[in-house]
Length: 194
Image (cartoon, helix red, strand yellow):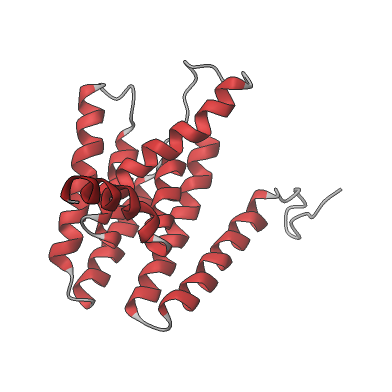
């Protein structure tokens, strides 16, 4: 039968406890990584917004303005409190410009405007150059995850696929394991400088 809402009696989807568990996991990792600092608050807020966005995008193929705008307002407030507003705005401009250019070049066929706003919001939290690496990583993660889906033929090449979850995964890596995203850039730089 499964769990049911005590008020309306409808069955509760497994998605809701999963969202809550993932959000709690983000909070625990943030506490372990950043202690009780503004960085902890930023990681918790970003993680909570990203988990919400990922699940909505997976189900409805939408990145809602209410989530990205709320996240952006909180990102700006935290950047001001942490005295890193210039870095935050550079990150937002970088990520937003890259995805915005793709949106314009494909006339919205390859990228939704919600993804552009999401990238800019993420940039506010992680700054530059992490925003650049995160954007690049989202395409790599997307390719790695889409190929098996296409190989199993559960989705066709012409079917719409959400891009938001790939940005979310990359942004969580940037927040909690930035060296993973920086490694390819560092290796490339070492190759030409060494």
